Image 1: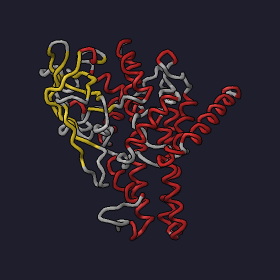
Image 2: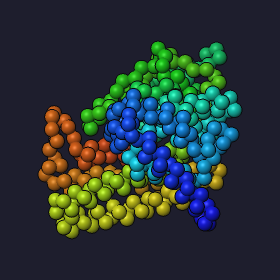
Image 3: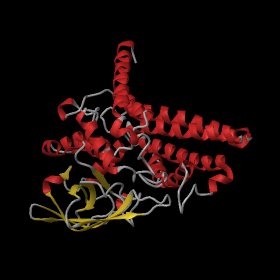
Image 4: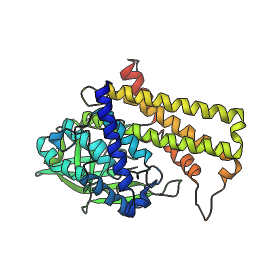
Amino acid sequence: MDAPHAAVDETFRAEIRAWLARGLTGEFAPLIGAGGPGREHELIDLRAAWERTLGAAGWIGIGWPVAAGGRGASLAQQVIFHEEYARAGAPGRLGHMGEQLLGPTLLAFGTAEQQKRFLPGILSGTELWCQGYSEPGAGSDLAGVRTRAERSGDGYVLNGQKVWTSLAHVADWCFVLARTDPGAERHHGLSYLLVPMRQTGVQVRPIVQITGTSEFNEVFFDDARTGSENLVGGEGAGWRVAMGTLGFERGVSTLGQQIGFERELNTVIDTARANGSLQDPDIHSRIVQAWIGLKVMRYTAVRTLASSADGVPGLEASISKLQWANWHRDLGELAIDVAGPEGLVAVGGAYELSDAQTLFLFSRSDTIYGGSNEVQRNIIAERLLGLPR
């Protein structure tokens, strides 16, 4: 990166850092450190107001083209935004699914009418989204989707069930992968539909996790409806569009995620120093390996993002998913081992957990959601390395 670009980027960094310092005060001060994986139940209404504040200030969709309502920020500036957002302890984003997944998907695969209808609500923080992919019989293997969408008049009628649907209980819309051709198998005959959540044909049931919280949900579609104008990419093109969405999911926001990981690692190190476990050779070695792994993740993510010339991340994103999921799971195990016997006892009440305990329990899911380890390895082996099935 040459000096002129570096100067512009540092000016941008100062701008977002100053805005966050001002914004996370007063009514929004309680949001510092709130939300995020394992803590999505926290301060929902206040975080929804924060989304609208971000939107009003133009901090949503900063990497989107100016013509689409974004800032047209460079990749470096997008990375800077997510890093500074995480460093400030800003809250977990309720609008993540819309901004980081659906918005880029519509820019890549949607019609001009779909972009005009849905992008403004995402940019303003006034419409929230969830992802309708996994099913009880088709978790990471999305080709096994059974939810049906049948043509009816000027739209589709949906019947089926989705599971592990994050924030479905607060979402206004869901992007759903459904089978529109019942005679087709596997990844054929699937379509990508945008479905309103607030209708009588949609029922949301929370799933209580081992953390004691309920950010995941089951979603039941019972003759739910959506218009034909909400079909993205054409009928039968759902697999291609859905894979595009998964690529965006592993995009630039992962750099901000890694800042959160760094903060968690630093907390583990501080605990190890305080209780003397840092002197244990095994603990010391695992902490060093965790630090190295975090650096490798960053370099891999930056390289993957830089290689996405067409804006749609490639299959290399599976490598990043495999890296951070295993790293974060191992960090959770390390956190409990550093805590020692105290890590096995609830902090208080019937089931009040420490941060280390929440990290350990929730990170068990990291290697499953968003594509399990087994599926990611298959993708890498078959599609990147050309190995047989």
